[in-house]
Length: 460
Image 1 (cartoon, rainbow, N blue to C red):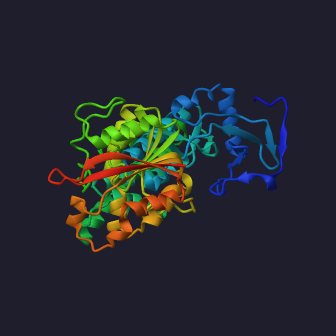
Image 2: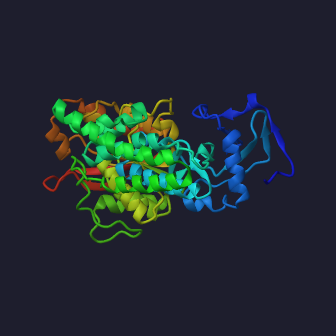
Image 3: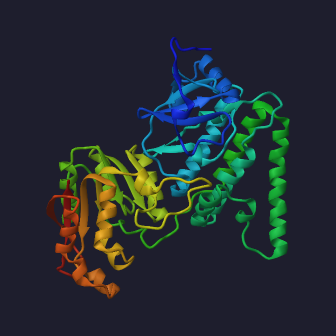
């Protein structure tokens, strides 16, 4: 076992413990000087030492487990303290897309197989122990790694069924929003929720059939030890492969279907809005960018190609799933999030988690083709829209103004007060937080209209 040459004793009462890390007896997460640590004891500490002695700590980042090393800190009541690589803010499970959930499930099984080969296991099998750094999922909870002895049951089996397999079965039946609602509210999806609505006799027959299938898994688990865990992981992987992810059609899923290919240089087939946004993004001084109401992420991809680190938000889960697939395929620095600062908070598991606006802030924020929806359809005042946008923006807010006589606004025929929405109102409210405002041309509202939209760039 490796031991530090010097130690730093930390006072338990003065530690900035994570409010979401208190249930696991094997360890607890905390921050110090902007760095991330985890205090370990018991089986979790023993497992870490086994990994350390086997020389596997440097290998584990290749398994998509967060980079971790032994710290010189000591805390009374704990056997050792480790330090983790700090990851950027990540969406919670209820803010994932279907493919994000599937990739997390497959990663869990892959890690479980590798750990079992070394006589170890993950005792918890849920997505709250995973984070997305861009479009790459990482496992983060070293407290969950414990020994797996010969003849011992593989602990995470039942939880895996409820937290991964059942929701994926629901998603396969095109009930993704319901699956993520249950994950957010209850942290799990019961087997009954995966059975189609039938008459009582058919439902009971399907439930018993599912129980017989699971009885086979339980029988293998009773054999115990690493061989059983490896076999179970393979069987569960096969079950997941039987649940391909559908792409349901939504109101906005084809919104960007006619857009040209994004790239670092404007092309002749780009419209005026796309050229203006490219020019604005190139003028930014790097850093992080929020794309709020991103749809399938054309502008997010453009920003990532210009070396900005992007968080892309939309309430349309199909659109976010498309963006996640593209970002993963092209290795782009884009973290997709299902959610919005302007929508009521969705459930975030059995504990209290910070709201989106506290977890996701950025140097720059894009709000394109969004503000008029918030004002005319959701009832937000201009002042409220700007306040929320300013709260998550450190430097630059890029907001598209759609005039009140825009083609689409006129089609909505919403009797809102046009005077409260005028350009001078937007500029006045923006000036409360951003002293400098520039204007860029955007696209026409519709091919049959000459009304021109405007992009406002507000800087602190």
